[in-house]
Image (cartoon, rainbow, N blue to C red; front, side):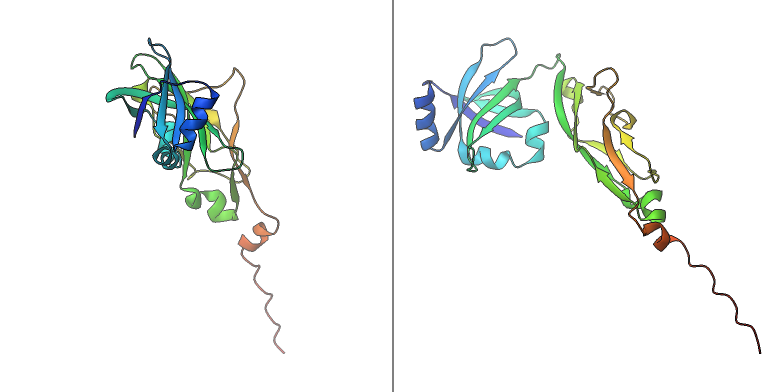
Length: 204
């Protein structure tokens, strides 16, 4: 995705307020081998971009004063009660340096799982994104979690998920968060069990 920005000359809270009144958003780019750069962006295109999943989990092509930069979204500050972006932070990306980013999880084939087909189980998503580490070229737009073999009573953990080549989950030594849980609602087991055959009536 592409984002357009320009250098911000004036700094300070009063200058930022003037920017916001003119439908601009103050921001910063940091990282890499360059000094942090103060920037400004048009509010409305940025607001709509922030509603797109890929804007949060992919490498962005930024045009800064007409020059290209590759960046990651790192932080967004919103107005306390208005749908208005107050400030935004980006990090520069280098091809040879690993990055850490939260990537969305896309769940597939839940309806085909034995838990749902045979037991009318409910699959609950405990988390919908996970932090990964990889080189920029290996960054996936999302990670697929295949639920086609999930059984009743089974929990799927982060370490159970098959990750793309070059991508690793960011976890502490013994950490292994639950991703999905599978439960059968009360009464569902009886509903999915074939009714017993009615006893034959005795002849007179």
